[in-house]
Amino acid sequence: MTDHPADAIKIDGLVKKFGAFTAVDHVDIAVPKGSFLVLVGPSGCGKSTLLRMLAGLDAPTEGSIGFLGKTVSSGAGGVVADPRQRNAGLVFQSYALWPHMTVANNIAWPLKVANWKREEREARVSEVLALLGIGALRDRYPAEISGGQQQRVAIARTIAPKPSILLFDEPLSNLDAKLRIEMRSELMRIHRATEATSVYVTHDQVEAMTMATHVAVLNNGRVEQFGAPIELLRQPATTFVATFLGTPPANLIPVSRSGDALMFGELNLAPASLAPGLETAQLLYRAQDVAIGSVPGRPTVGAVFSEAAPIAGQTMVTAMIGALRVTGMAEGYFSARPGDPIEVSFLRDPDATFTTSGARVAR
Image 1: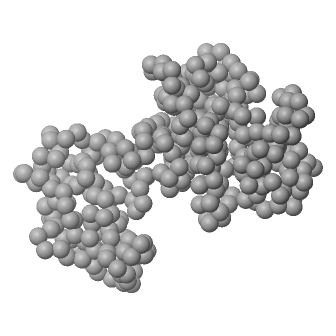
Image 2: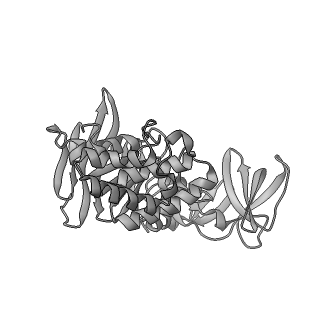
Image 3: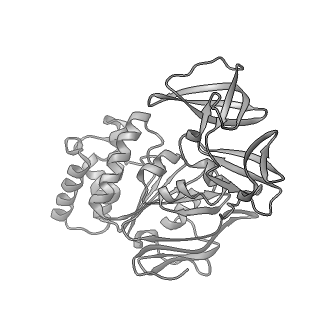
């Protein structure tokens, strides 16, 4: 990977093995200064292990990590820089507050360890308490405040020393749905205010798409795709990215070549020119491009109703076509009983074509 002066974090050929198991498998990422990078993927994909290596809690087996042009970890030499020397702050999933200290003292502690003068500590504590909107809590103890307030204190403690890099390990997973939405906006505001480069781990793709300037989708220890959120939504490189990101999820329809057509069973879905040289392929249809009901002039197939969820004046409908689960949209409010027969129509040509192994077919 080529060095770039604007890169805050540079990850080259990073590998982490635990015995015979490879948790992180040759990851290469360059993160520009001031970015909000979200590492997203299913449980066990390697995102938390990658974050732990960024924080200096684990040493890489191979490869290297650079912060602001300085190598902080190397597989050849183990952990090069002590976690305290990385100018990085880590917010854990658990709040990890000291129960015997007040909110103000929790926030001041890392400053005291860093040998800040008392008057400087007090000024900085007041500053971050105001930034997080928790000034009224300064003299309370962790047991006396709510979970959402504890999370704000944990974030305040992390940003108090003014780190250049902020690391977040699923910090909102312990909060209820409403508070998670509020804290997402709060974290983005804090990111802008601190101007730190942030790396945020989550399995929630909604968090990824709403918060990130850059997204790295991980699967089985590898980065399936890295880029801006809209880029990944519009141009997914693999079927995993295509179906993992986006709400509602996209549909993958298996087809086979028959003459000049790509067939889904007896249904002619698309011209064979969309899958040059392939006998079988997968066609990507967004949920908004799949209608519930028969549409004149468009390919329509029988299905079995599974479930429905109202979304912004429409209904997201899930149906089964044989063993294939398909999601489409119905205008207004749609209702049926599970097992009822319905029809599904494909409104336009597929958004993308993939091989059966999951790679995107260039057009």
